[in-house]
Picture 1 (tube, rainbow, N blue to C red):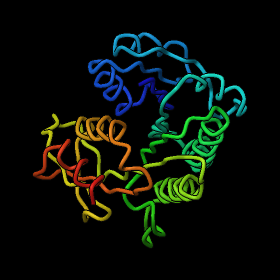
Picture 2: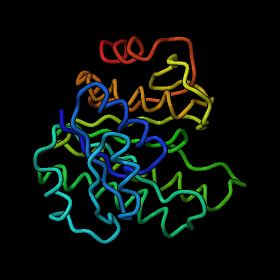
Picture 3: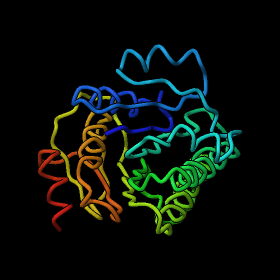
Length: 220
């Protein structure tokens, strides 16, 4: 497959690019800064410089024209304020989905966040609350589209611990953490399993091998 990843320089995206390239997929990563290109090339991905906060649907659709799948893994990142949580985590996700539809790319996978499906608890840090609301709004936008075969993945707390290759993946898992390595492995498996389309899934560390967990969801 040819897979285009928005947020191609992110910590999950770089891991995913390595996995996809290693299994023989053609992968491109959308990045905002040209100086990030070398890291993508080292991961086996084609760098595509395009700022999702200023690009048009047509600009992005051109990069998706030959794709078999698209992954939204972009985020405003640590240190960004409430405004960029909305402009990246919500608006850019909707724009990328618009572009996928315009380019005729049906398979669309979103990296969301656990907790995006409910109002943040009272006392939540305002910026983090804005992030969760933005993710929730983006998920609602994508899941309402009939032109996409979407899957929403909502990982728990992210860690940089080495992946175990074993996870808990379900509509509801309960709270927990998961390594970025294992998130990337699950994303790669989801892309290869069209039976997971139309599912919103939570992900934490667990006891089930990744491929088995994804297959179980697809058959469930």
